[in-house]
Amino acid sequence: MNPHTHCLRSLCAFLAALVLAACLACPALADAPLVRDEYGLFDADTLAQLESSAEDASAGHDCDVYFLTVDSIGDTDQRAYAKNYYVQNDLGSGSGKSGILFMIALGSRKYVTITYGGGVTAFTDYRIAQIEDKIVPMLSDGSYYKASDTYIEMCADTLDFYAEKGAPLDSGNDPAKGWIKWVFVFVIPLAVASIVCGIFYAQMKTANEQTHANAYMPAEGLALSVVEDTYTHTTETETYDPVKDDSSSSGSSTDSDGFGGSSGGKF
Image (cartoon, rainbow, N blue to C red):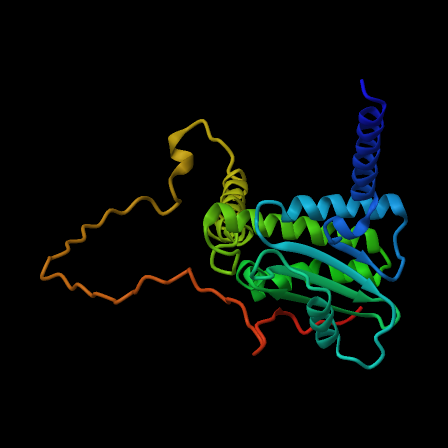
């Protein structure tokens, strides 16, 4: 083999290996992180676990699930801050930039949820309120990992529901509310009936069994009477009872710039 040819092949192989190593090591070529811990709240292992969960939640839904921690935002409105961050960092999946972002500003003790693109449709006002009602108390207790993990899990459930049902999870189709309905329709009436029957049964057990039939006769004897009813007519009354529509939906509120989500608050 020509020595020059051998050297050229060796050089090409070296350059190829160098380019591959650079691609693997360069963060700029990797996907932007979904869990953005700018405050430095989590250690490396915890951050990696949350990132993996967020990637799994987002996969296949064309809607990215973001969790953001920052320090103090001062007097800046948390919703305005989060929206600006979303735009400035070019967040969101696909051409529609679809996503949901939950932000906590630990130095200011503020939080907010924003949605954009397909995230506005997938996450209704009703569902966002459910998510915040669940995780904000955890933030107040300082359980930051539990809050972030629960948030990502609830987002995953929401996106899976939307994919399976073809409609976003809302007040009219929430499976959790279905259980409550059955409790009121069957369980509570059954419990009340059981209590009433138990009371009557206890009262019946106060009687003492007798050996002679005369013991069951009243002292004044038994008097029989005849009562006759004469049928004259039948009265029928019809009441209009329209079928109730249980498919009511809260939907998703949006700003003029297309962002949805909550107003946020303090924890």
